[in-house]
Image 1 (cartoon, rainbow, N blue to C red):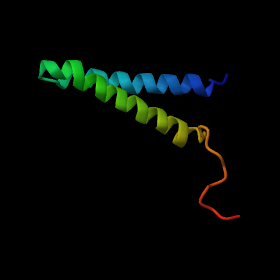
Image 2 (cartoon, helix red, strand yellow; image 1 turned 180 degrees about the vertical axis):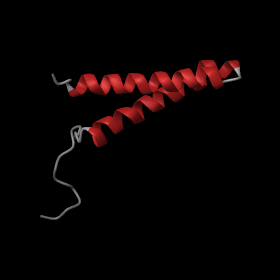
Image 3 (cartoon, rainbow, N blue to C red; image 1 turned 90 degrees about the vertical axis):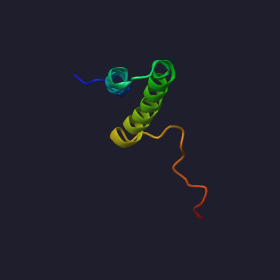
Image 4 (cartoon, helix red, strand yellow; image 1 turned 60 degrees about the vertical axis):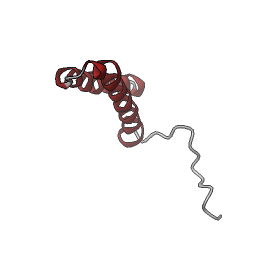
Length: 73
């Protein structure tokens, strides 16, 4: 049984973001950080984790062409 890549990527993102959010809520001392700091940090971690899963783990290219615009043929 194989898990589709999209599902695996979603599960990895969910786990990483939940860990960061839980640690953020435990470590934060200032009330304003609960409203701004933890959500922004979780969002940035989600974006970075999504990019890492897509590029490094799965080797996918999102809309990128194989041909470079800087190379001469």
